[in-house]
Image (cartoon, rainbow, N blue to C red; front, side, top):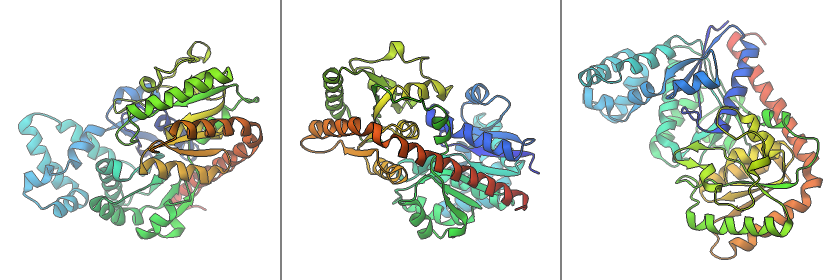
Amino acid sequence: MPKSIFFELSGGDLCNVGDVAMTQIAQERMRDSFPLAANVLVSGRPDRVTELFPGSGVASGRGRDLYFRPGSLMRSLRARPALEESIRVRYPHAAFLAVAVKRMIKQDGLTDLRNFLRSIRCSDVAIVAGGGWINDSFAGHARATLETLEMAKKQGTPVGMFGQGLGPIRDPQLLATARRVLPQIDLIALREALRGPDLLAELGVQPSRVMVTGDDAIELALEAAPDALGLHLGVNLRIAKYSRVDDEQAVIIRAVLGAWAQSSQSQLVPLPISHCPDGLDREATRQLPNLLEPISGTPCSVADPRPLLARVGLCRVVVSGSYHASVFALAQGIPTVCLVGSRYYRHKFEGLADMFGDGVDLVDVHEQTGLAERLERSINAAWNSAPYVRASLRLAAERQVKLSRAAYARFAEIVTGTP
């Protein structure tokens, strides 16, 4: 039985409620299978690991970044990029020494480097908690994480990936790394069936190593679902480079939401998911009128998803620019209007719509004319359909929870060799 489990996270800084929720479920599921194993999480914020996951160890995210930083070995060994990648994965001790000498001269990062490599070497199992990071928007992080998994496989460690959203990928280096690493993974559980399976097939992954399960965080949201339909309109705005929603579009969206809330005598419930510097959801919704902050329960933070899930339960409809605000709503049986600004988010939301069916509508924020009218029509349609799609959405959520649990059980069989 494994003694140590190495956890790769979607967001190592743990500043996103969705990332925290997925990691919580991943830890619970692995603890069910291997109750005596210690958990080691890759993170650049040891303080947040201690706060959110007491008793877990930390593999230095900074050490990982130093180790896989492009050119770190090339400058030390004068190696070509392809050779650099091969040395890092196949000969970690030599790579560590080369980078360590450079860092020792600067008196910086040696402890982090050593911690990261020791964490991989001492782990019996490696898993990747849910996320949507294998794509062009996060190509650097994706390559470093995939190479970390390749290092684990080279030493014979079983590796599983859960709740994964893949693509779009056009970056040549990321495609090459994914094509080399992903076929080695013992089990890949996808959170959508629309594009992920075909992409994995193109990358050479055998279908027998793939399952489609939905997002792991659905279980937390389903458990928090209230008995009655909510009365208000939930709102999440994600203004970030990777979402391609800018301030100009946000002004239009805010105007529509404010006018709609006033005409319907409803209130707006802010649903911040990201507390990260590159996507502060709270700041994006702060300027909205008729906010329900005073009665929406405990202030939302990244430390605990439950207050946010309680807020979601107050809603009859959710308008969302983030993936997990939509997941949390749909899992509770609440129809969602998804704001699409980038190819990356279109992939995410279309996959979500395919998993849940009715109750998901996509609105392109880059429509040249009529964005306000299109958004208002979508909100009205969702509001009217809410009582009728509630049951089917929750059934879809229950089905995905069962599939997700089955994926973790199957991976436990792979680890132990016991069907």
